[in-house]
Length: 499
Image (cartoon, rainbow, N blue to C red):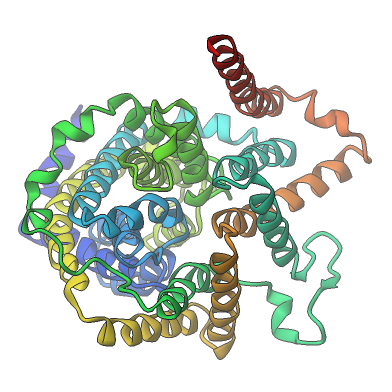
């Protein structure tokens, strides 16, 4: 309590409130721009913290991190272009809602969910950081494999009406994910003599191509409006969605946020894994699973609360063990060291007041994000009113700029256009792009952790069944796969009896 009271006194100064607000504004801009990742935003701001004291520098970076993680939802909802990989699942339901004239409501529910997810992760960060970090430290390759494999099981439930086409899409995603140098053996795979492919296919340009460029190509061919321009006036008013609508799904909100915190506390996983698992769990337990992928607020709540739950969760091992949970948290680690702070138990022992002040700042930043995000989403809704003759070229230009920015060479542009053509052909022939994206993101992690596990056990697969955490994930995989089949069989038998 002494640390908390001292922290409140330090934070509520004009300078620190201004720094937190500036961080949120930068994060909103960077996160909403396809190709400009949160990690890039935090890295760009880091040099500006050198002239600040430790507290001011860290809360500035925290503002960029929290707001950037949310802002990917803005373009995901409005133009089907996830600003960050963790916003991919937001686009699955957000974009259909935009086409139904409910963009304002989708943006509002995404903002509310992100703020609540961030606040819940802040509570865990403050109260349970050392305990959760100890559990996360026990994760080795077998635990990482079963966790990421759990994420891959989502593919079966996001394949739409054709599971076969979904599996084909995922198979090609796994094939593309294997391009580049094998991290275990060091052998180059599928580079076809082109050295730039040794680094693999970056996920951000791939997402830009599969979602944004493909959608533009597809809609141009159909010669129809990409967005609903003649929306009713009430679609832009705040009355569509309120806090009451959000708290109708309070259990889903809490569950998804905790998933985000838990996954974020595991080094090397990232927000995309959490959002896939939370989205799948939300669909599995929903009373209206048929709405998922067609415009479900539950899907947006699960996605946004989980990927903002990551923000606090990823800082847990960063502060307590010196092991970053995400790439953005790795920059935080560097920031701490630059300011003369050594992460670990001694950080809490000797710099307790500073750390708990940062924790309180985490809460304040999420509140600031609520207000600034409200104005940002209100302004962003005007994108829908731009004529298509202007909108198509602008979207394509941003896609090309984003593809270039993420890598810094024309390779990113080529990857975006390549996946844009593939995504267009998939849309035209009824193949869902979502399974391919999941496979692209999780495929390398599944392969790497599987091979590391088998190396540790000399090829003995029993290593996955002799470690408690790994067994727990295997049980969850079995239950989430088998229970829906059993439930569907019972339902089929019920209708047969009725006939």
